Image 1 (cartoon, helix red, strand yellow):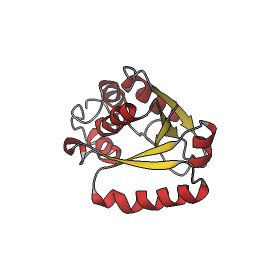
Image 2 (tube, one colour):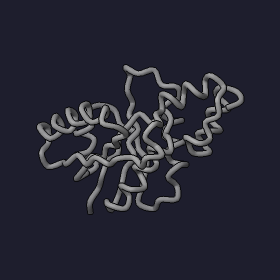
Image 3 (spheres, one colour):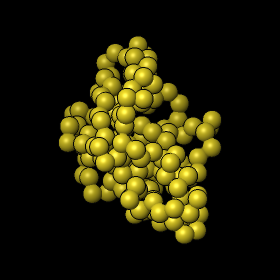
Image 4 (cartoon, helix red, strand yellow):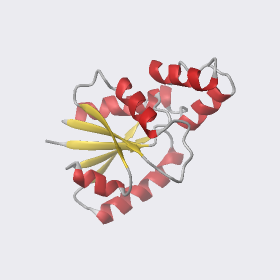
Length: 160
């Protein structure tokens, strides 16, 4: 069974993330959306909220599950018996950082490949950071995130 881990903070999960998940689910037998617990970042949503929003967003995909992890990604991928780590690329500017991570992960465990998927054109400008900023400033986020995320942001910020 070919298992892939798609890691991220998913604060919040966006339609761009879901595009990557759907496409990865067509390539792999199983995809684990792995919500990172990062004590360095100050997320808008708790790990439980992010995990719940991601679970709701992928509920129609039979071979996709949502989990959380803390620590070194490559160790988590090993524990899950993953053969690949999926990373999404929106623009060339993402590539340099993602390439460094992929090379480091290959050094740590050459048996786990990193697979890059480009987002569809319509999602290249979407980022969790921008979605949060739009929501915080009272803008409409419904075109950028799943319904459950929109509801959570409306609850967090008031009318979004």
